[in-house]
Length: 339
Picture (cartoon, rainbow, N blue to C red):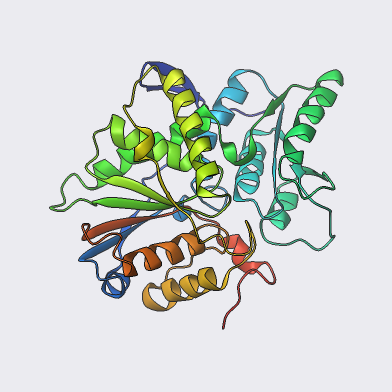
Protein backbone atom coordinates (compact mmCIF):
# COMPACT_ATOMS: atom_id res chain seq x y z
CA UNK A 1 0.00 0.00 0.00
CA UNK A 2 1.18 3.51 -0.82
CA UNK A 3 -0.24 6.73 0.65
CA UNK A 4 1.04 9.45 -1.71
CA UNK A 5 0.68 12.75 0.14
CA UNK A 6 -2.25 11.71 2.36
CA UNK A 7 -3.33 14.73 4.39
CA UNK A 8 -6.50 16.38 5.70
CA UNK A 9 -8.83 19.11 4.44
CA UNK A 10 -11.04 21.34 6.54
CA UNK A 11 -14.46 21.80 4.95
CA UNK A 12 -17.24 23.44 6.94
CA UNK A 13 -16.81 22.13 10.49
CA UNK A 14 -15.31 18.83 9.37
CA UNK A 15 -11.67 17.80 9.05
CA UNK A 16 -11.50 15.04 6.46
CA UNK A 17 -8.76 12.69 5.22
CA UNK A 18 -7.68 13.89 1.80
CA UNK A 19 -5.65 12.33 -1.01
CA UNK A 20 -4.37 15.07 -3.37
CA UNK A 21 -4.72 13.93 -6.97
CA UNK A 22 -5.64 17.15 -8.81
CA UNK A 23 -2.60 19.40 -8.97
CA UNK A 24 -4.05 22.27 -11.01
CA UNK A 25 -7.37 24.02 -11.45
CA UNK A 26 -9.17 22.73 -14.51
CA UNK A 27 -9.35 25.42 -17.21
CA UNK A 28 -12.35 27.51 -18.16
CA UNK A 29 -12.60 28.17 -21.91
CA UNK A 30 -14.92 30.48 -23.85
CA UNK A 31 -17.03 28.86 -26.57
CA UNK A 32 -17.77 31.80 -28.89
CA UNK A 33 -19.10 29.80 -31.83
CA UNK A 34 -21.48 27.79 -29.68
CA UNK A 35 -22.48 30.98 -27.86
CA UNK A 36 -23.66 32.44 -31.16
CA UNK A 37 -25.53 29.22 -31.96
CA UNK A 38 -27.31 29.42 -28.58
CA UNK A 39 -27.84 33.18 -28.75
CA UNK A 40 -25.83 33.77 -25.57
CA UNK A 41 -23.53 36.73 -25.09
CA UNK A 42 -21.08 34.44 -23.31
CA UNK A 43 -20.73 30.68 -23.03
CA UNK A 44 -17.93 29.01 -21.10
CA UNK A 45 -16.98 25.42 -20.49
CA UNK A 46 -15.18 24.18 -17.38
CA UNK A 47 -12.93 21.33 -18.45
CA UNK A 48 -12.96 18.73 -15.70
CA UNK A 49 -12.23 16.28 -18.49
CA UNK A 50 -8.71 17.76 -18.40
CA UNK A 51 -7.98 16.62 -14.86
CA UNK A 52 -4.55 15.11 -15.40
CA UNK A 53 -5.02 11.89 -13.41
CA UNK A 54 -6.66 8.63 -14.41
CA UNK A 55 -7.92 9.80 -17.83
CA UNK A 56 -9.58 12.78 -16.16
CA UNK A 57 -13.20 13.44 -15.34
CA UNK A 58 -14.76 15.01 -12.29
CA UNK A 59 -15.15 11.68 -10.46
CA UNK A 60 -11.54 12.22 -9.35
CA UNK A 61 -12.75 15.13 -7.18
CA UNK A 62 -14.87 12.86 -5.00
CA UNK A 63 -12.25 10.13 -4.89
CA UNK A 64 -9.75 12.50 -3.26
CA UNK A 65 -11.94 12.26 -0.15
CA UNK A 66 -13.32 8.73 -0.54
CA UNK A 67 -9.96 7.05 -1.04
CA UNK A 68 -8.46 9.42 1.52
CA UNK A 69 -10.81 7.92 4.09
CA UNK A 70 -10.12 4.39 2.84
CA UNK A 71 -6.39 4.89 3.35
CA UNK A 72 -6.91 6.50 6.75
CA UNK A 73 -8.91 3.43 7.81
CA UNK A 74 -6.20 1.04 6.61
CA UNK A 75 -8.18 -0.46 3.75
CA UNK A 76 -6.36 -2.71 1.30
CA UNK A 77 -9.14 -3.11 -1.28
CA UNK A 78 -11.54 -0.69 -2.95
CA UNK A 79 -14.93 -2.09 -3.97
CA UNK A 80 -17.19 -0.23 -6.34
CA UNK A 81 -19.51 -0.92 -9.24
CA UNK A 82 -21.71 0.34 -12.08
CA UNK A 83 -22.11 -0.49 -15.77
CA UNK A 84 -19.16 -1.52 -17.98
CA UNK A 85 -18.91 1.99 -19.46
CA UNK A 86 -18.57 3.69 -16.07
CA UNK A 87 -16.21 6.64 -15.75
CA UNK A 88 -16.39 6.36 -11.97
CA UNK A 89 -15.19 2.76 -11.98
CA UNK A 90 -12.28 3.59 -14.28
CA UNK A 91 -11.30 6.54 -12.07
CA UNK A 92 -11.52 4.39 -8.92
CA UNK A 93 -9.34 1.69 -10.46
CA UNK A 94 -6.75 4.32 -11.41
CA UNK A 95 -6.64 5.70 -7.86
CA UNK A 96 -6.40 2.18 -6.46
CA UNK A 97 -3.44 1.44 -8.72
CA UNK A 98 -1.77 4.69 -7.71
CA UNK A 99 -2.11 3.83 -4.02
CA UNK A 100 -1.18 0.16 -4.27
CA UNK A 101 -4.70 -0.95 -3.37
CA UNK A 102 -6.60 -3.82 -4.95
CA UNK A 103 -9.76 -2.73 -6.76
CA UNK A 104 -12.71 -5.09 -7.06
CA UNK A 105 -15.49 -4.07 -9.45
CA UNK A 106 -19.05 -5.31 -9.71
CA UNK A 107 -20.79 -4.62 -13.04
CA UNK A 108 -24.45 -5.11 -13.83
CA UNK A 109 -25.37 -7.29 -16.79
CA UNK A 110 -23.42 -10.08 -18.46
CA UNK A 111 -19.77 -10.28 -19.47
CA UNK A 112 -20.00 -10.12 -23.26
CA UNK A 113 -16.29 -10.75 -23.67
CA UNK A 114 -15.75 -7.78 -25.99
CA UNK A 115 -16.30 -4.66 -23.90
CA UNK A 116 -14.04 -1.70 -24.69
CA UNK A 117 -13.63 1.93 -23.60
CA UNK A 118 -13.60 2.35 -19.83
CA UNK A 119 -14.00 -1.39 -19.23
CA UNK A 120 -10.79 -2.09 -21.14
CA UNK A 121 -9.00 0.60 -19.13
CA UNK A 122 -10.24 -0.91 -15.86
CA UNK A 123 -8.81 -4.29 -16.84
CA UNK A 124 -5.55 -2.59 -17.86
CA UNK A 125 -5.35 -1.08 -14.37
CA UNK A 126 -5.44 -4.54 -12.83
CA UNK A 127 -8.87 -4.45 -11.24
CA UNK A 128 -10.81 -7.64 -10.45
CA UNK A 129 -14.15 -7.65 -12.26
CA UNK A 130 -17.38 -9.60 -11.95
CA UNK A 131 -20.89 -9.26 -13.39
CA UNK A 132 -24.23 -9.60 -11.59
CA UNK A 133 -26.02 -11.25 -14.50
CA UNK A 134 -28.89 -8.79 -14.08
CA UNK A 135 -29.63 -5.56 -15.94
CA UNK A 136 -31.12 -4.13 -12.74
CA UNK A 137 -28.62 -1.47 -11.70
CA UNK A 138 -29.43 -1.98 -8.01
CA UNK A 139 -28.13 -5.57 -8.30
CA UNK A 140 -24.67 -4.04 -8.08
CA UNK A 141 -25.32 -2.75 -4.56
CA UNK A 142 -26.23 -6.16 -3.13
CA UNK A 143 -23.23 -7.85 -4.71
CA UNK A 144 -20.84 -5.14 -3.49
CA UNK A 145 -22.08 -5.72 0.06
CA UNK A 146 -21.71 -9.49 -0.33
CA UNK A 147 -18.23 -9.09 -1.78
CA UNK A 148 -17.18 -6.87 1.14
CA UNK A 149 -18.34 -9.55 3.59
CA UNK A 150 -16.53 -12.24 1.62
CA UNK A 151 -13.26 -10.30 1.56
CA UNK A 152 -13.53 -9.42 5.24
CA UNK A 153 -13.94 -13.10 6.15
CA UNK A 154 -10.79 -13.86 4.16
CA UNK A 155 -8.80 -11.33 6.18
CA UNK A 156 -8.81 -8.41 3.75
CA UNK A 157 -9.89 -4.87 4.62
CA UNK A 158 -12.33 -3.65 1.97
CA UNK A 159 -13.73 -0.15 1.59
CA UNK A 160 -16.97 0.14 -0.39
CA UNK A 161 -17.52 3.17 -2.64
CA UNK A 162 -21.14 3.54 -3.82
CA UNK A 163 -22.06 3.66 -7.50
CA UNK A 164 -20.87 6.95 -8.98
CA UNK A 165 -19.16 7.86 -5.71
CA UNK A 166 -22.59 9.21 -4.70
CA UNK A 167 -22.05 9.60 -0.97
CA UNK A 168 -21.52 12.60 1.34
CA UNK A 169 -17.73 12.28 1.12
CA UNK A 170 -17.91 12.10 -2.65
CA UNK A 171 -20.13 15.18 -2.74
CA UNK A 172 -17.54 17.24 -0.83
CA UNK A 173 -15.16 17.18 -3.80
CA UNK A 174 -17.80 18.87 -5.96
CA UNK A 175 -18.57 21.44 -3.26
CA UNK A 176 -14.95 22.56 -3.49
CA UNK A 177 -15.17 22.67 -7.30
CA UNK A 178 -17.48 25.68 -6.84
CA UNK A 179 -14.84 27.44 -4.76
CA UNK A 180 -12.31 26.70 -7.51
CA UNK A 181 -14.54 28.24 -10.18
CA UNK A 182 -15.15 31.33 -8.07
CA UNK A 183 -11.41 31.88 -7.80
CA UNK A 184 -11.06 31.53 -11.56
CA UNK A 185 -13.59 34.32 -12.10
CA UNK A 186 -12.25 36.64 -9.36
CA UNK A 187 -10.61 39.06 -11.81
CA UNK A 188 -13.13 38.75 -14.63
CA UNK A 189 -15.66 41.47 -15.28
CA UNK A 190 -18.50 39.00 -15.86
CA UNK A 191 -19.55 35.90 -13.94
CA UNK A 192 -21.76 33.04 -15.15
CA UNK A 193 -25.43 33.55 -14.40
CA UNK A 194 -26.25 29.86 -14.70
CA UNK A 195 -24.18 26.65 -14.56
CA UNK A 196 -25.53 23.69 -16.52
CA UNK A 197 -24.35 20.13 -15.92
CA UNK A 198 -25.40 16.50 -16.42
CA UNK A 199 -26.88 14.57 -13.49
CA UNK A 200 -26.57 10.81 -13.13
CA UNK A 201 -26.06 9.38 -9.65
CA UNK A 202 -26.52 12.86 -8.17
CA UNK A 203 -23.25 13.59 -6.40
CA UNK A 204 -22.00 16.26 -8.79
CA UNK A 205 -25.25 18.25 -8.73
CA UNK A 206 -25.59 17.92 -4.95
CA UNK A 207 -22.07 19.31 -4.54
CA UNK A 208 -22.57 22.19 -6.96
CA UNK A 209 -25.84 23.21 -5.30
CA UNK A 210 -24.31 23.08 -1.82
CA UNK A 211 -21.13 24.85 -2.91
CA UNK A 212 -23.03 27.58 -4.76
CA UNK A 213 -24.97 28.38 -1.59
CA UNK A 214 -22.13 27.88 0.91
CA UNK A 215 -19.66 30.07 -1.01
CA UNK A 216 -22.32 32.63 -2.03
CA UNK A 217 -21.66 32.14 -5.73
CA UNK A 218 -23.71 34.49 -7.95
CA UNK A 219 -25.01 31.83 -10.32
CA UNK A 220 -27.84 29.31 -10.19
CA UNK A 221 -27.31 25.65 -11.08
CA UNK A 222 -29.51 23.59 -13.40
CA UNK A 223 -29.03 20.01 -14.54
CA UNK A 224 -30.03 17.73 -17.40
CA UNK A 225 -30.74 14.18 -16.29
CA UNK A 226 -29.03 11.45 -18.29
CA UNK A 227 -29.80 8.48 -16.07
CA UNK A 228 -33.21 8.43 -14.35
CA UNK A 229 -36.46 10.45 -14.38
CA UNK A 230 -36.02 13.97 -13.06
CA UNK A 231 -38.27 13.40 -10.04
CA UNK A 232 -36.23 10.36 -8.98
CA UNK A 233 -32.97 12.21 -9.56
CA UNK A 234 -34.22 15.13 -7.47
CA UNK A 235 -35.02 12.85 -4.53
CA UNK A 236 -31.52 11.38 -4.72
CA UNK A 237 -29.87 14.81 -4.90
CA UNK A 238 -31.86 16.18 -1.96
CA UNK A 239 -30.92 13.19 0.18
CA UNK A 240 -27.24 13.54 -0.71
CA UNK A 241 -27.32 17.27 0.09
CA UNK A 242 -28.86 16.74 3.54
CA UNK A 243 -26.41 13.96 4.39
CA UNK A 244 -23.47 16.09 3.26
CA UNK A 245 -24.71 19.04 5.33
CA UNK A 246 -24.68 16.78 8.39
CA UNK A 247 -21.19 15.54 7.57
CA UNK A 248 -19.86 19.10 7.24
CA UNK A 249 -21.92 20.59 10.06
CA UNK A 250 -23.42 23.26 7.82
CA UNK A 251 -26.86 24.50 6.86
CA UNK A 252 -26.63 25.49 3.22
CA UNK A 253 -30.13 26.88 2.96
CA UNK A 254 -30.66 25.13 -0.38
CA UNK A 255 -34.39 24.60 -0.78
CA UNK A 256 -36.15 21.81 -2.63
CA UNK A 257 -37.31 24.32 -5.23
CA UNK A 258 -33.67 25.20 -5.98
CA UNK A 259 -33.04 21.69 -7.34
CA UNK A 260 -33.84 22.15 -11.04
CA UNK A 261 -33.46 19.05 -13.21
CA UNK A 262 -34.62 18.90 -16.82
CA UNK A 263 -36.14 15.73 -18.21
CA UNK A 264 -36.45 14.58 -21.80
CA UNK A 265 -32.87 14.04 -22.94
CA UNK A 266 -32.02 10.53 -21.71
CA UNK A 267 -32.95 9.04 -25.07
CA UNK A 268 -33.42 5.24 -25.18
CA UNK A 269 -31.84 4.85 -21.73
CA UNK A 270 -28.83 5.45 -19.52
CA UNK A 271 -25.62 4.63 -21.35
CA UNK A 272 -27.53 4.11 -24.60
CA UNK A 273 -26.65 6.63 -27.33
CA UNK A 274 -29.30 9.07 -28.51
CA UNK A 275 -29.54 10.83 -31.84
CA UNK A 276 -29.74 14.20 -30.07
CA UNK A 277 -26.69 13.42 -27.93
CA UNK A 278 -24.66 12.34 -30.94
CA UNK A 279 -25.70 15.50 -32.78
CA UNK A 280 -24.57 17.62 -29.80
CA UNK A 281 -21.22 15.80 -29.67
CA UNK A 282 -20.66 16.56 -33.33
CA UNK A 283 -21.75 20.18 -32.82
CA UNK A 284 -19.19 20.75 -30.05
CA UNK A 285 -16.48 19.07 -32.10
CA UNK A 286 -17.15 20.96 -35.34
CA UNK A 287 -17.78 24.36 -33.75
CA UNK A 288 -15.21 24.36 -30.94
CA UNK A 289 -12.87 21.37 -31.31
CA UNK A 290 -14.14 20.01 -27.99
CA UNK A 291 -14.95 16.31 -27.55
CA UNK A 292 -17.89 15.40 -25.34
CA UNK A 293 -18.98 11.90 -24.32
CA UNK A 294 -22.07 9.90 -25.31
CA UNK A 295 -23.25 9.01 -21.78
CA UNK A 296 -23.19 12.34 -19.92
CA UNK A 297 -22.03 15.52 -21.57
CA UNK A 298 -23.34 14.84 -25.07
CA UNK A 299 -26.88 14.42 -23.78
CA UNK A 300 -26.47 17.36 -21.38
CA UNK A 301 -25.39 19.65 -24.21
CA UNK A 302 -28.32 18.41 -26.29
CA UNK A 303 -30.50 19.52 -23.39
CA UNK A 304 -28.79 22.90 -23.14
CA UNK A 305 -29.26 23.54 -26.88
CA UNK A 306 -32.96 22.62 -26.75
CA UNK A 307 -33.56 24.64 -23.57
CA UNK A 308 -31.90 27.71 -25.06
CA UNK A 309 -33.94 27.34 -28.24
CA UNK A 310 -37.09 27.14 -26.09
CA UNK A 311 -36.19 30.37 -24.26
CA UNK A 312 -35.38 28.76 -20.90
CA UNK A 313 -32.26 30.88 -20.38
CA UNK A 314 -33.42 34.12 -21.98
CA UNK A 315 -32.73 35.83 -18.64
CA UNK A 316 -29.13 34.52 -18.63
CA UNK A 317 -26.72 35.89 -21.19
CA UNK A 318 -23.69 34.25 -19.51
CA UNK A 319 -23.82 30.45 -19.21
CA UNK A 320 -21.20 27.92 -18.08
CA UNK A 321 -21.33 24.26 -19.10
CA UNK A 322 -19.53 21.72 -16.91
CA UNK A 323 -17.59 19.08 -18.85
CA UNK A 324 -17.49 16.10 -16.50
CA UNK A 325 -15.30 13.93 -18.74
CA UNK A 326 -15.93 10.48 -20.17
CA UNK A 327 -14.34 10.59 -23.62
CA UNK A 328 -13.25 6.90 -23.50
CA UNK A 329 -16.91 6.23 -24.30
CA UNK A 330 -16.34 7.65 -27.77
CA UNK A 331 -14.29 4.57 -28.62
CA UNK A 332 -16.94 2.02 -27.75
CA UNK A 333 -18.52 0.63 -30.95
CA UNK A 334 -22.10 1.80 -31.38
CA UNK A 335 -21.94 4.55 -28.74
CA UNK A 336 -22.13 7.37 -31.26
CA UNK A 337 -24.30 7.54 -34.36
CA UNK A 338 -22.72 9.98 -36.80
CA UNK A 339 -25.45 10.83 -39.27
